[in-house]
Image 1 (cartoon, rainbow, N blue to C red):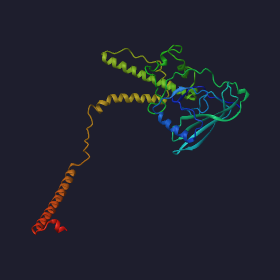
Image 2 (cartoon, rainbow, N blue to C red):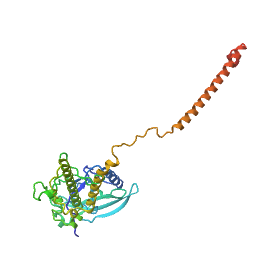
Image 3 (cartoon, helix red, strand yellow):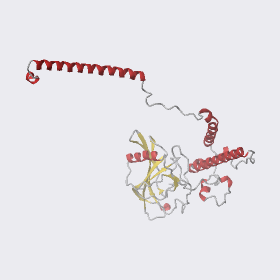
Length: 358
């Protein structure tokens, strides 16, 4: 039996430590995935490796292609199985399990590691995956695999900044304070000191990867599209700066030189990315032209808090209430006058009101 290992690339991992859990139930996994979908709108994921996780460890990662799981430093003597189970809230959770794992070139004598990963197929975000490493039944390790390495060490250093995976900021990178975006790759050579090893590794064209290889490597494709988007944004900003400086100086500036990547822009950038960039650029131009004409400096009229009431209807109700009050006051005065007259009659007869009442 042959055991194939996935490609050894970093993955997008939720930055917080989820701790050790001896067991993870279906209900707990579903709740963690629902909570993770909410937090992922505002928390960027970090590029990192999963390597030799300990028993009970739980990690949360974002997989553009859930069918391709990254290398975790463990060799498994089994094929991964998957099945779907109902989850609370009319949701459906998919469980993928692989058993009989071990770390090559270690002190482990049996294959006992189990990896279970969970994702919500219905009622959640299917690309957010919860992974739990635990202990299961053990078997003997195949002798030919005992010392066969599963990945090359030491692992290369990952310098890519964290990136948002969901929400309005999806695809945006988060650079440390005081650090900006690196210069475009088209303006420096591959051997330039400013080009880090990680940028070369994450650039599919620098590695000679074909479009088919890029399609099989979602992480590299995302990084490449992010770099292309940043290059387009920087070029647009330079064009605006030239236009403003030319209009303020009163004379035309130097002739515009096309960037190195402008000739094959449609070949390097995906159709969706190019269409999104053109859409944003056209709407910004339209907004600059029509914003003053459409809105100007006028402010919308302030609506009074009493505008919901009808003044004439209120006046009618006040007049009616006033009439009712006056009628009640007249009745009270009439009763008082009758009682006073009765008391006078009793006193005139030589009796007190107390004697009459007794």
